[in-house]
Amino acid sequence: MRNKKSVKYAKYGYLFSLPFIITFLIFSLYPIFYTLVIGFTDMKGIGATKFHILDDPLGNFKTVLSNRTFKMALKNTVIIWLGNFIPQIVLALLLTAWFTDRRCKVKGQGVFKVLFYMPNIITAATIAILFGALFAYPTSPMNDLFHSLGWAKEPIYFLQNKKLAKGVIIFIQTWMWYGYTMVVMISGVLGINPEIFEAAEVDGANRTQTFFYITLPQIKTILLFTLVTSVVGGLNMFDIPKLFLDGGPDNATITTSVFIYKQAFAGSYLYNRAAAASVIMFIIIAIISAIMFRILKEDDPESAYAGKKRRVRNAEK
Amino acid sequence: MQKNKHYTGMKVVIYIVCIFLAILSIFPFWIMIINATRSTYEIQQHAISFLPSKFLVKNWNILTGKSFNVLRGFTNSMIISVCSTALNVYFSSLTAYALVIYDWKLRNAFFKFIMAIMMIPAQVTMIGFYQMVYKIHMTNNMLMLILPSIAAPAVVFFMRQYLQPTLSPEIVQSARIDGAGEFRTFNTIVLPIMKPAIATQAIFGFVNSWNNLFTPMVLLTDQKKYTMPIMVSLLKGDIYKTEFGSIYLGLTLTVLPLFIVYFALSKYIIAGVALGSVKG
Image 1: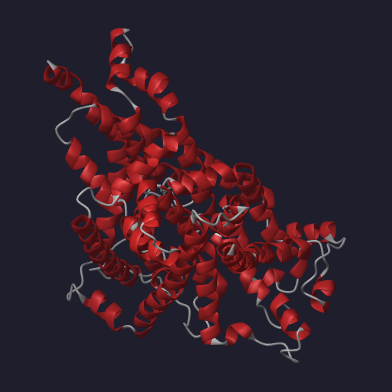
Image 2: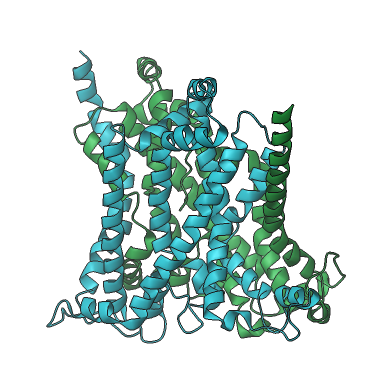
């Protein structure tokens, strides 16, 4: 009986998914393959639309992989990502432990959450330029601060310093994302069955023990999920490094996305090189995501999404 | 008694750290807003001030006297963000509905496919996308920034997870008995049920679209079509080099709408993030 009905209505399943599928084919799948094809060709120069496959089809890939700037960009991307992910997750976990502590309630949590999350919602382009202004030479709030505190007599050219430039980008990324990570972690902890904590309390576990032996293992899937999204986001970091210093000084803050943009849309319009670099990034992202989802799946038969499902349900209550 | 003492010490540390972080969140924006009202000379003397000055109008005149067109950027960003958010939530809900209520052969395969493509970032497909759009001479057409949001895998995923436990097949069944068509059932019965999920995704869809820099930067060459983030990038150029006050004012204007939205809806936004919101 039920089967018959579903057969009758099955066509609506296809029909209602059609807009999604068509849009995906045109605006995502076709561009992906097109990018891949361009990677094997000689397409370059402003306004170029015609192309030929190179005699050495892998030429662009070889050029990109041996390109010093690309290597630098890849290295920077990893450094900036690691540099912001580690403090971000540590800070988020610390705040989560404090805000979800059952024995010592922190007042004003709501206000703190709103303020900590705030930078995340502000346009990254604006933040990049704002920080550029904050650290500018010779007149800027940072120089003013250093002068007032007597740390420097002359204005400092902060952003000429490669390490400092990278450091500021790492700071901006951490500052923009720790609030988000914290909110996600807190919701994960709130989704844990309270009886587990009660049992731990009865058994005499102190707070540190409770956190490391109960809380952390319980939110492992959410932690891994955060890791995956952060890696993918980090590998595509564009707005901040592009508008903060445009990859400078001396390529110290160039990321792979900025590299791709610059290859294709600035200077020599090397679409083919940019496409090859995109494909390389695509492969790296795919491999990393696949490995991480593998870990997630082995870890929890219900997969990473179980936690999400539970939270969606809890929210209705 | 001793235990309480221990907690007090701990609490002091917690509050110090939290207040420090809160100040860190506010401080850059505070400087930005205050400096938007100060003259270049004042900023050169002291770049940090806690009190506003009276040069707001003058800064505004300098800012709008050059290439920075606030109203145009605002209008363009508004059109793009509103349209793409509407398409995004509507079609994601429809696709999710197809995944939840109908029993079709490729349903599971399609769902797995959506999960697999969720992680594909726009950056890695951009060269092909640009070439495609360039070939059909649509680079300065806003539709190219709006239409792609019909297919938002992460939002479909979220909507499906929301709909699965919420929607009982009996409701749909009884609508059918009452003679409602499938499409009408979705629009009049299912969409209202999905309101909370739609509201959450609409907020994030809007903010993501509003903040998007990469795609518009690649596609738009016509100044008349510039969105807010691209207008912002003009502030970095030589034209505003020493007009510190107007640079800060320009930055302030771009974030003002976001501040208003955020502080009006912060409760829902934080709850939305907690639900495992989808960030672009």
